[in-house]
Length: 157
Length: 82
Image 1 (tube, helix red, strand yellow):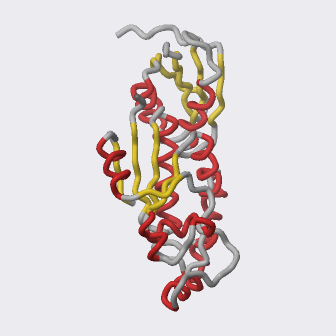
Image 2: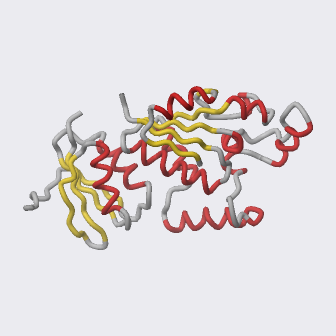
């Protein structure tokens, strides 16, 4: 059985997603079977862009408006400055020849990294499976515990 | 410890690449390297001196050695069985 690494992607922040994808690629490139568990704000990284208003009550609709979703909608955890900071970080990465988040995301897919989403988060945010893209499965904490207990590396980001 | 002669049949240029790209590209390239063959990797990332031997240890490939090469270092990795 392949060695495993599991990462809980709790944060929906752009910079933290960059760290997640860096580690996921490194582990996959080292021959590990990598599983990402997207929870709460992390789920929004997988949200399709499009209809802004989602959800079944005013609170979830408000989140739908506030959180545009996807990598493009993600903010920096600090110095976002209404997107200026994010633009600067992306530019700094590009100038240095570092991989973009999009490229690392794509690379993780090619390595067969699994993208699992917490079913509770989906419910709470008022989203349906159709609102997300690139999801391998919707699972609960039981699956996380099983995977994490079999993993040599488990992180919460 | 006497160093083994550093010769390779395959080459990969990771010049200018930053973390995690070198190990990602090495992993991709190694899929095509025949077992027992040596891959030479040019890399000038600061952390590569630690990362490439570490990658070899984790994946079970043999880190043969390295030598200075211009502004970077040339690393030699022997593809292991399995």
